[in-house]
Each structure stands twice: as C-alpha cells, then as structure tokens.
Amino acid sequence: MIFHIVPLADWTAEPDLPYAPPSLESEGFVHCSADRPTVLEIAEAHYRDTPGTLLAVELDERALTSEVRREGEASGRYPHVHGPLNRAAAVHLWEIVRNPGSPAELAPWQPGP
Image (cartoon, rainbow, N blue to C red; front, side, top):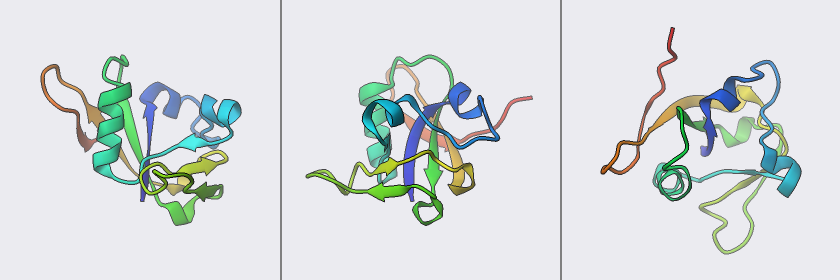
C-alpha cells in the first residue's frame, strides 16, 4: 500500500474521473508515501497550515493503472505514480487530523451529510 495526501475538495471534485493533481502536469508524477509514519511526517512538514479537510488516500499499488517508480536515495519512502490515480485503487480514505500542539494523526474519514 502507498498513500497520497490530497485536500478533500480536490479528491471529490470530479469523482467519475481518475485523480490527476497539478504535480502530474508540472513534474510528471504524483507524489506518494510508502507508509503511515512517512505520510504523517509529510503532513506535518508541508500541510500543517492547509485549510479544510485533508485526506491520506491509501492505494493498493497493484491495482493502480499507472506505473509506480521508486527512484533515488529515498526510493522506499517516496514512490512516484507516473500517471493519474484510478479511484478503484483507493482502498481506504484517512483523514489527517491536525490539532494545534499535537502531532498529526490518521483517523478513518467519515463523509459528512
């Protein structure tokens, strides 16, 4: 399993299409994390002040229709998906809970009414 961090509004914007974040066009791949500790480190370092609900989409790497590459020194921790994320590969949605003075945590995302 690998994880991708995404604002809820972006993930739900076009639910019938594969998800393609801006990094896919600008860098040629989708940034991912290899495990929960790494996704929480990334959330703390880069998303602490991002407003709104933030998700960690847990993806079954074998179910992705785009190629996954593990490049460079940190290849194990930061896989790159070279194409859009097909939503059928998402096996679980986690909310990244960010409370002031506490480290970020993952909790099962509960869709609102």
